[in-house]
Length: 186
Image (cartoon, rainbow, N blue to C red; front, side, top):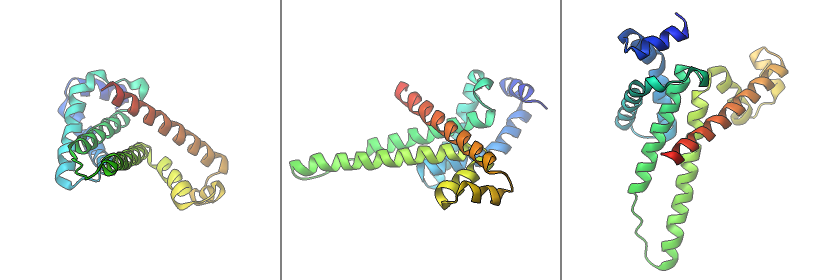
C-alpha cells in the first residue's frame, strides 16, 4: 500500500490504518516522550495517549510534503513532552530567604530547566530520526569515532557517512527551529 493511500485511510478514520500506524509508531512515540521528560511510566502512558489523540484530531492538517506520518507523530510527541515539562516547571515554587537568594535561585533553576528542556528536545529529535542516522550520530558524538571508523563499522564509504551526518544535522536543526517556533506561537 502506498503512503498517499495510507494517509487517505487515516483521514477517513479507517481503524486498520490507525492500527498499523499505532503498531509501527507507539514504541517510538513512547521513547521520544521518555527522552524529553524522563517521567515515570504512568505519566508517559498518559502523554502517549495524548499524542495519539492529538494525531487523530489533527490528521486533516497533516502535510505529506513536510515528512512522513511517522515523522509527524514524532513531532507531536516532542511537543507533548515539552508541554508537560513547561507545566511542571511552572508549578515549581521557590522558597528562599534573602534578596540575593531570591534572585539567584530562580535564575539558576530557570537555567537548569532550560538546559534540561533543550537537552530533552535534542534527544527527542534524535529519536525521531531514521535508525541508521541515529546510529551514525551516536557513534560520532557519543562514542567519539571518526568518520572513517564509522564507515568501517557500517561497511560503507566515508563519503556516505559524511552525507548521513550532514543530512541528520540539517534535519535536527530544522526540527529544533520548528519546535521552538511552534512553542512561541502557542
